[in-house]
Every structure is written in structure tokens, then in C-alpha cells.
Length: 126
Image 1: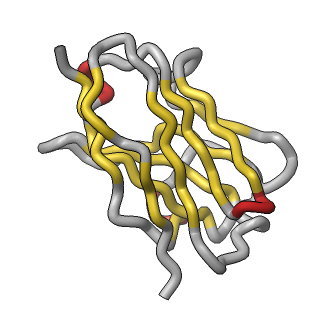
Image 2: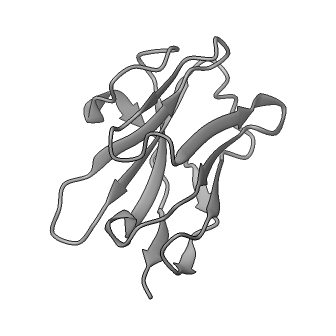
């Protein structure tokens, strides 16, 4: 059973930065777009950012544009989410998953994503 492993979360103050990593050891996900999602308590899981497998395509939710940057290193089977200017409303569990139906980044549709990890908690608080 393939499962992504997220890491890099933590407790930070508003305005801080974090870099999340999403790895799938032994899994060749180069042909899939990879997405980052987040879920805050009592809220639905929402798509944050997506990156295409090799065409440079990306998607960002309006709420994170200009603050978050997604990237991937296919040689290391890892996708990163660099988060800066963090706000309390960014507090959530962050998950990554592979879009097994698309290779380009598009508006994320939840049911197209598979191989969900356990998530990493990001808490932004003063």
C-alpha cells in the first residue's frame, strides 16, 4: 500500500515560515500531479497547491497565492511546500496526495487524489 509521508509541520508565530515535505519512498510518482491539502478542525479538506509532474504547471488557492511555493524533486520522490508569511488561519493538518488522473496541475478535485499520508500539523499562533 503506497502512502505519502508528510513532515515539516510545527508551531510557529504569525509571519514565520515553514517548509513541508511530502515523500513516497520507493514510489515512482513522477507521472502524477501532486497536491497539498489542508484541513482545519470542523472544516472540509481544501486544496492548497498542486504541481504538475514535469511541465512546470502549478496551482495555488487564492488564500495562499504569493505566500506559498510548491516544488518537486523527482529524483528524490519528494514534493515541497514552502510557506511564508504564515497566518493563524493557515493552522490545519496538511496532507499531500497524488492525482492519479492528471499529470498537469489543475484546480484540485478531491476524489482524483490518492495515496494520502497521515498529515503534518501546522499551528500558527502568537
